[in-house]
Image (tube, rainbow, N blue to C red; front, side, top):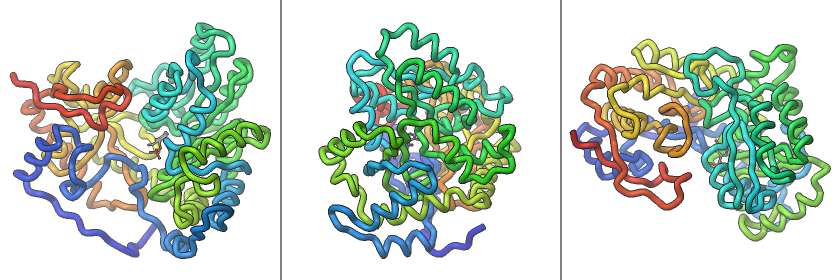
Length: 448
Ligand SMILES: Cc1ncc(COP(=O)(O)O)c(C=O)c1O
């Protein structure tokens, strides 16, 4: 549904270069130079292509320190698209998380979520809290059917909350789509049940709405009663129960940088507190670390993201990638999520023992084979949690084409044809903060 308005050249580095680049990066693909990557599926965050309308808006960005027109445009877009009038901008999603969780969470608190995303988990821990994940029972089953496997298990959450001291759960978080649980969507019914739980716990309901539009597409397709609603209506209905919404504009804001916290009208005091925290950590509360031009582009992007034809194409492309991978014999998590295909590395490489990071071994093998960069979201990224060895292949928005999909699936097919040659990995060095280990730890192949 697009034609290119600008292109960037990419080149497949030769095998020798790929081998040495991987070794130099310590078998951690975060350490690669982007120039050595042919197809980059590391993340869908901030890596998409902007529209000509967004570029036009950037030229008109207002760079005033306070009260810029670009901020007003962003405020208007957030009010129209998400339905929230209180807004604190931040440089990206984790900046927004820092503002919010730093204000809400205290030492000894517990925070309950359908699944904490890695930066969310880290911010809760940083603020002194204990992040508790309560995904639905089959969230980690790569073959189980289910329309909304991203949901919060509300009863499990209630049981876990009962083990925490009264008044020690300041927030219930629902992340939609659920990035750490294979990008699975969350139903409106589940958001409403989470609201009731939050009320019972005297907690705030926080929605991590980075992928608010993609989640709405799944609601329209799958949740009874919503098939005739517009994406815009679904977005507003789904977010309405929240006290606070975190958004990284780098996803469904369709921009390369930026984010914000949106707050319910009733949250006047919290709004004032977050504005003060914004001045301290992000920048004045009418820019929050973004240039005016970035806010102007996001104001346009938020509206574009709810275009039903765009979403049909976007999520259709992710599903196409899953089908092509499966045709090559690659085991993928089903149903397919909104922004990425998750490969089941435990099943793909059954000979790599637990503890030797089969997911990371698969990520490295795919890079060596075809300079395709994915990311491990299994025991390397989440050391102390019991989850499957998934590899995420996240598609940047509006960036890749059919030929890229073919190259990716052929690469993984070739890797699996020679799977016996792939060995496990062991950690050489890791940073002190375990929640962030996968970003910068180095590894080496295990000697047999
Ligand atoms: C669900 C979720 N929350 C928060 C974030 C953090 O956003 P950012 O990368 O803009 O800091 C991400 C980023 O991938 C995410 O997927």
